[in-house]
Image 1 (tube, rainbow, N blue to C red):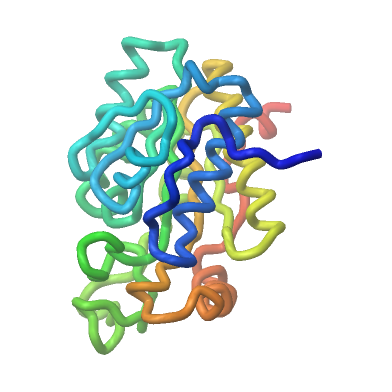
Image 2 (cartoon, rainbow, N blue to C red; image 1 turned 90 degrees about the vertical axis):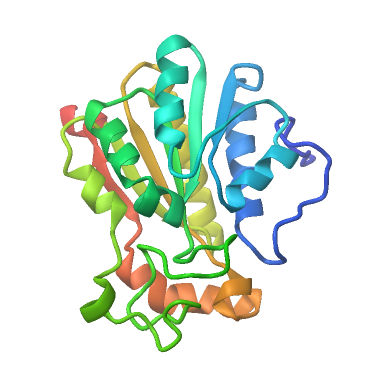
Length: 247
């Protein structure tokens, strides 16, 4: 079978940093939308961050949101257009810092849309500052000696936090640094979208990613770093699956 570029992506070359997994995440999301036949029905909500670049690459309806406010915008759009497939694509600084109230509110209300959370443990677009998910000891431009929990607290585990709420129906985390992780992530995104299209409620997918530029590593080095540091702390897996629990 010949592989073709997903119809949800323009032919524009990617402007993400070399080796950055945002390109990979965008591709598998687009593949899922194509496979579900939702190209004309999908709405991509984009806040501030590296995700904003998707405005250049996504071939379909998009809505811009202020920093951290994607869940609020998605709520309004989905409630007024309940038959549309709506998803927000947010980074860790955007979702877990400035947008923490918005994501928790939407999840707690059980809004019927999907949030895809790109977790690369840094503020990628604005200069590599410490994010809520930055690991202990990880160096950033605002923690040049490594994150110290005594001063800045511990990395936030968003899947674990959101899965404690009653309303969300599917909460899962996947790592994009291996073929299996990529395959699992695509299946998870597809399940989240299918649940949304069935009117089941709020779905949350976390994608563990890299940031070669701000981590100060080559793309290959970031893969090893994720195995050694990121994945042991942010353990991949399904954290909540109401549908499976009810069977």
